[in-house]
Image (cartoon, rainbow, N blue to C red; front, side, top):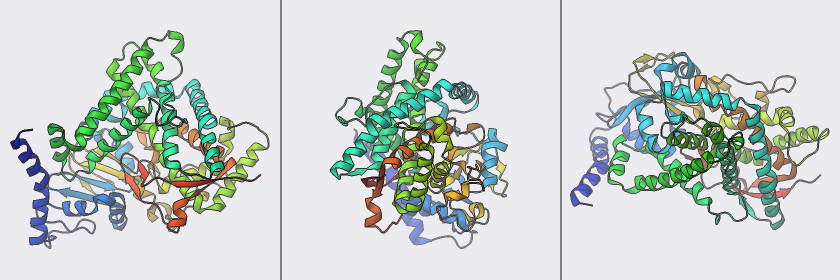
Length: 508
């Protein structure tokens, strides 16, 4: 690399720090400008110092600011960063995701950050490009054959890999990182559903099997691409990408490996006979000769994003809560036993899982407090005014925080910070859903998650199969007195350091 390129890189990287230090020590927060929801802006650089100070705890910081606001909305403007808002107001969420949907696409900023990884897939497209993919995917997800394929894939992974792994850990008294186990389970399962390939990440020979590198490359790309959104300046990741240095070089290498793997699968799938093209998502889409190889690649990777960490994130936090709440665990066991009174089998059927209302409520309540996708961001096309009166300029980012909404007393009452599965049950013990604009864990409006039902099937099947046989006791609850674990924010809410557990056999 030429010396001038290095000078340019260092200059751009340290420029925001110089600006920040200059104004912080010389001026401090402005006393003339009005504060925005408790934050006093600095001259020229606005709220950038607050972001620099709290970017390592972005969710908790924004939640604190939002919940102190009378409108449950935080406005953010600063030099070098696009302006925008972060809200936990259900009326604003409904306005963004439904009432004024066309004015809040994913937008150019998000598209640019994710393009090299997600391409033009369903989670990174707008307008007619998105609508056509949504229509095709919706048609496939509503087929009973796909639902049955998913149920069978979960059953295979549970019976042949998950339960034997936990049995071995119990017999040998080994500590197991259940977050890692669930992530490998989810990756095997979504690869099976997406393109009928079994990476066998939960098998005994992991990580030596040849497909394990695919999971590692995919996870690395996903995490590093997500980190772009938290760069101090928008230009920083672009400069690193242009110079092919640091995290951007790692992203490039990982994405290339992921794309090559996906393309190899696509080409082999197209070579199959027509009779074989009736199970996984790739086979269903590949049967349409109008779809290009690049389209199919983007489609597969987008569905892998949706299934790789969302369910594993939700269940990791759920099992941690379960370690601290034996009363909830006992009610789940009783419900499972009630279902077992008139059925037998290694796992559970779709109808049996549907009967488990308390388990459904317990998982949902866990996701209220620890949503797998804690924040989601759109872009404002035209100047607009939110229902709470917040003015939004065109080009601004508009983010809703499911994490903050789950902690809002205005939405859930004074006991919003308490884990209470009963809040999701009616007087007869049946599950009662909440408005998706108050509980946007599966998004809402036209972009509502197509895989919501399938996600619940997978999560309930895993929990019921484990809890029926084992007790998982989180090691960290003993070490830290039950304090909530720290999280790592990327596309999903992962637990920092994993969740080490001891596996104990449940007595009859």
